[in-house]
Image (cartoon, rainbow, N blue to C red):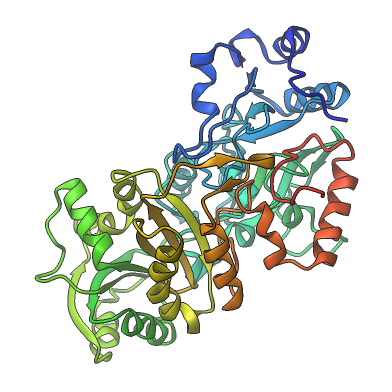
Length: 470
């Protein structure tokens, strides 16, 4: 049985003995940033935040919490969007940011070992210095950590070409809920000796153990990159065009969908000029990377799609960054008009245009005065639906947030289309009540059995991912 509010003075003293006084936070001003998520929508509380600096310290913290029956929530950069890293039920926060060592790059094997607290941006920089590239990339790269991206199997803009975090993961070091350590950081590409624990831990959202380090795959750094922003008269034209380019452009790294409302909001929020001569109902930002100049190839591919209306092309890094800003500032721009209710979903690409077209009307059925903003990764069917202007939220069981039936409306529609209620942000606490829409009773039972095996006392993020037992 987990202790309720069991983080007492004695436990804090024990934690201090393990990690040192500077790395145990108990004052309200020290804890504050660990108690709220990036959006401001999920707010919890904890009596303490502990910041271990080594594998041995992580083991000692887990063993202590297991013996005391104290629940743990792990944090990296705290960039999660589904409440999975916030102490909504008073859990102890274990921040892994001090585990920030990056090992030497193995240029021959194209691999590197990185601690859980390494940011994605720092890993990218180390890889680039060795003439290679870490394929996972998204707007939160400067704060999101390796451990957090593994916990959620993060995706980002390059999934189209390289896959998500699981595809980059060659091994992990982790402390299970039992306090036992599993470590496979050798980087063998072929190793069929039983269960793939790295893959199992990837996407488990800290419910099985704490990932402390990972062996990661690096990819080729291409010398030539080209970015193009393309305007279309309709969402369906944009989706169809990307389908054509996925077949004709082997060097396609990314394909990002934006809509007119979001583009106007970004321009207004950050004082940017419109990227094209006129506004279009839909935009696609594509990026290609190759060893040779891809300009002629891209020109032919884009020019071969009759529905293309206007194009802006950039090859130099400054102009490319300017075009990317229109996409990457969407999240912050939406935040300027209110705290958003976020839906990170995937639908079959054949249903993508219909979904994007219909979602605002479905939102209006539940919250007539709300505004819907949509953007995402059109090449893999992942759309980020953001809704602002919703009523105040109420914290329910296990931290689940009820927004007046909005979750019901969106997630059931996604399920009807054959999609997933979580594409890359995870389930957390926000979506745990809807897991049954994507996972059968047998699958959920199997997940619970795995958790019991690796976390027999249920101390690891007990309110995330799996729905409450009724």
